[in-house]
Length: 255
Ligand SMILES: [Mg+2]
Image (cartoon, rainbow, N blue to C red; front, side):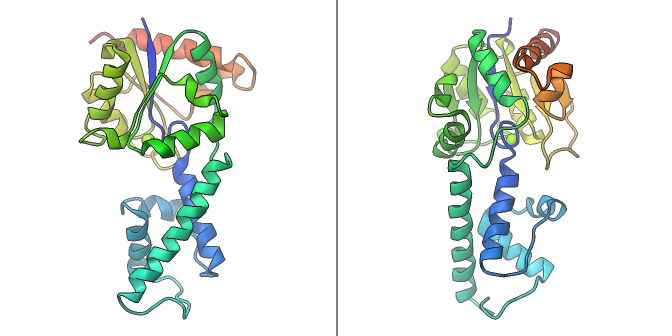
C-alpha cells in the first residue's frame, strides 16, 4: 500500500533552473552586456557548478561581447563577476518570493488531493531548507508547508544525491519502509539517489533532463499533468494523477 510520496524539488516541483536562467539574463540586461543565455546554451553551462564559476567559464570559453566595464585582469575581474552574481541572486530570490517560479503542471493538484486522501507527503532535496521553504510558501500559500510532513534538505546530510542519504533521512523521519513510498524525480542523479534507498521512482522529465535515460524508473513522463489524461485541466486532475501513481507503485514496489 502506498503510504507516502517523497518529492525532489528542483526540476520536479518547479523548473527552478529556468528561474535561475532568467535571473542571469535579467542581470545581464541591467548591465547592458548584450548577453543572452538561451536554453541550449544554458544546458551546456549547467555542467559548470556554481553561478560565479559559470559566468567565468562563459567569459573564457565563449568569448562573449566585452563592454569596457568588464575588467581585463584579476583581481578586479573576480570582483566584477562576484557583483554580477550577487545581483543575479537578488533577482532570483525576488522571483521565488513573488511566486514567479511557479509549480510544474499537475503538481499542486496532486499535492492537495494526495494530502486530502491521507497520503503522507515529504521532500528529499539537495537544495537548502530556506530555499525550499520560500518556494513552497510563494507557490502554495502561507499554509503550503503544512502539506508536507517532513523536509529532508541538502544541508542535513553528509552526501548529496546521487547518494541515498537524503532519501534515507526522509524515510527515517516518516518511519516508513521504502516499499511503502514512491519517489518523484526529474534527473538521473535523483533517480539513482532514490533507487539507492530502495525506493520505486516515477520520473517527470524537466527542461534540462529530457535527454537523459532513466533505467529502472517505474515510468518516465513529461509532467504530472500528462498522467491525468483527459482530466488534466479539470479539478479531478489530482485524483487521476494519484490513481496512476498508486497503480505504478503497486506494480513496482515489490522489492
Ligand atoms: Mg531535480
